[in-house]
Image (cartoon, rainbow, N blue to C red; front, side, top):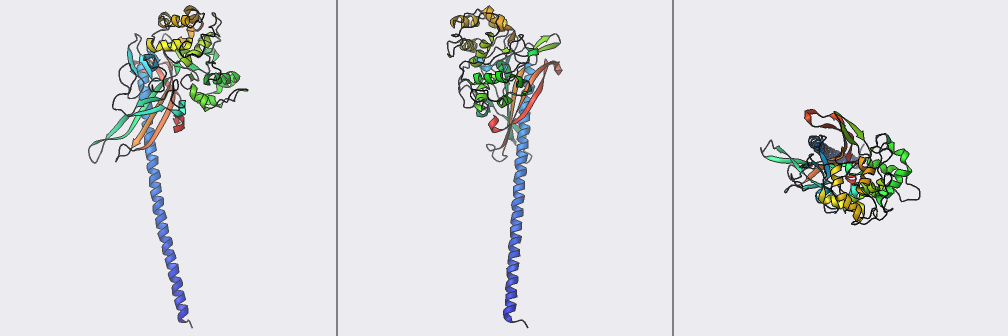
Length: 428
């Protein structure tokens, strides 16, 4: 026979079990709610990131459209914005914009989103700016390692509930001219000057281009397998030299490319050449490499060591670059040769070389337009409640090459994508 104490014990145990099960049920409901909320947040973040990537691809497509429209024809000229008067200065965030001129030298457009329509490279008033070349590409902003800013363009929609126009995101783009840089690798079968490849500047020996040149020389056999400029950092460290680290690559970004190809029109077709250089740049770093390349041609007396010095004012590369700040862009190599800029720079720097000798050596590798470009697209998504709050961003990059094939609608020769990649914050 059960006692009253036994009954009370059983009732107490049942209560404990009931409360425990109730607590577990509440915990399960809470966990399920939290999981649902997290899943919803993950879904929203994924949606925002997808929208941002779509907007970045829109920016890339807009850039490719502008590039094809304005630079597809054979008679178009391209140049670095520095030739319009922007000297090497960290504050000049539009110095590395790519501009297009027609064959008569009349300005056509800047290949950058939000650019004004005038020959001076500037973002339109009232537009927000975004940096598409930043510390991940060139390190801290300084002379010859300038960041590149462009204007953000709004993507607007009509709100289905209010009927009002609202911004749901932004896009932007920048087209970089790879032809105004010195090529790190030029296939021997396609060289513009037989057996002469462009050289990176080696003076001073501690400069980024000198360290990179050492690596390129030591591991020349590996270069045909390199697919992009960024992959050059994978080259083994040359013996007895500083490491080929990210700093070297960043400091060389604005002055070095992997391979810049150029098309020489031949009727309806075109001959593709490597080892070429678009002279419409005021980069003294790039011009130093071209001047050192001349000394390798043996087609004239070598440039003096004084001319190849490191002075930012009196060396030959600096005199040419500074002269291009006020004299460019040139519409032909002949115009550059006959302008007086080259002869004055050669004479003033005590080079020991005449203009005709200099042009005889490297003239065939000089051009006034580029056919290889780096294109970056940007996109973001903003909050529908607070349009100053950016919910997601994305950035992509493509290397683009003009080919001999005709483009549709009479837009010159066609551009094709050579490589594509998504960029993380550390890549920009």
